[in-house]
Image (cartoon, rainbow, N blue to C red):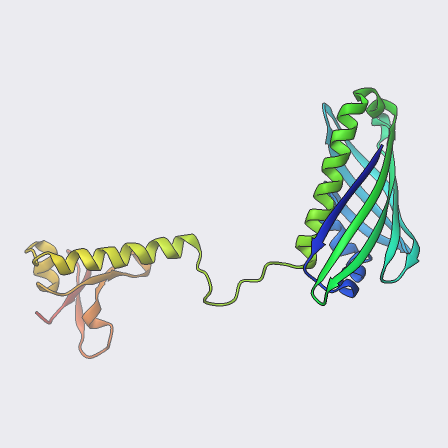
Length: 228
């Protein structure tokens, strides 16, 4: 079977080219990959576990990079043995075109073949699986080469954002309603707010600036503000 596709990567061509030879990058991009190790010049050993239809198999094989024309094109070839499941082999011709200083168009033409028990699954299933694996690899490759960095202060975790919104809503609600007397108001005063701290204790906000002290009440099992 033959597969073709393109992927735009937001990085200079030299950076994309170097990533094609990086075992750590390839390990993150190859679907089901368990390990990738350098075994020689432009040669890698890999272990991959895949499920194709009802068959799940672990493959041990090698990946070779050849036809190198830096930083324009190369060929990735791989072959793996999956024991009773059979074997899988294939190759991909990769071309890199510099579109701009920070953008590279990756084009690939791939061929794949399987044998043994895998070949009995039917050409349609094998073809669909191969297309998905190839697509997943190059999409993931683009994500790894250009990670989406988040600048400090640009975004907060959802939990923090939710907590902050709840605090704003609570403050607005309190400002619109008259102060109510309660056992909590009796302990901390009519207009003193409280905040939660480690251990589940409550501390009056007026005590946080260190301007005065508060005492610990054994019955309430919490701090009592002396200011009313």
